[in-house]
Image (cartoon, rainbow over all chains, first blue to last red):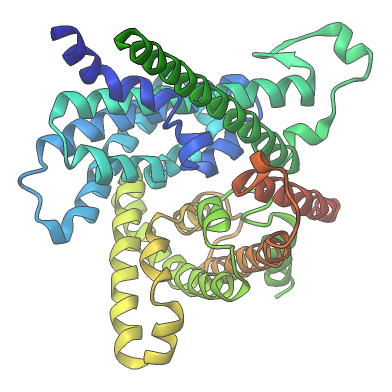
Length: 224
Length: 193
């Protein structure tokens, strides 16, 4: 019995990464997704910065869920989110100045990332602290995963490098296509990745359904 | 005066907010199913961006004078949220017809990163800054947003009738259409000043 409880507790963590993947399934937080994914490293750091803000704001919102009047909840959430995103900005400026430069405007714009407000409103304000934190980690890691993936693909196709390391043969062959690090390429890669993700999730769901059906069939057969 | 013109062309075409700066993608994808709703959203954004540019610019002068630039994000987002509420009340009171046109879109703009984006850009990136330039930049960026969302809405209306593979339906095909629009807007980048 305990095992199922444990699974239920950690469910927000796993659904956040795949089934409720913020980027490909919920289509939230699209602005930073497209803007910073010109390289895998940018995507990764943006993802981690957002995850930090998301986990902290989810925790605080969930702690205060019984004290915030319904009518002013949105400004209250925005204030909590803005506080943490300012913290991230300051931390990065101090210790990661290069990253601070390359993320630029979008680091201040973490505050209007719809993922944060959506999770505060639809999850953290209704659930206790632990699930909210886990939901934050799950959704955050899912976001980080998809940003890194998009950044990886765009960097590889656009400049012929992986995490900043140039792959000489690719570049010498003249394969990199600059279009992929331009805005147009961003939209395109995002669109095609979403197709792949949808196909993959659908296939997985069909498989699970098939396994369940087979099990049900077998148990029925066993009864007879 | 020539600088103002350059500012407008730059904000509308060369550095289009949606298609080359990636600001305001959420409403760009979310509210572009029909041309009329897209136009309503666009007008609301132009309006709020213009007003927000002026007000946040004035507030930033006070913040800089007090040496509190680090409060920018928090103060700006609160001002914008309050401003949108205020605008909503005023429009409702004085122009019911405009309210019925913009009504539902106004609250949505709070989380439109384009508004905060233009406010922050006005105080950090604009080369020679004064309040007129900030206002012009706000309006022109809003116009750029409106043009982009209108084009996309026009294409999506046609896509409704097209025969699209199952897994491309919805967002993926919209993103690919947006990619082609962005490609054509990339041509404007030759006009760099």
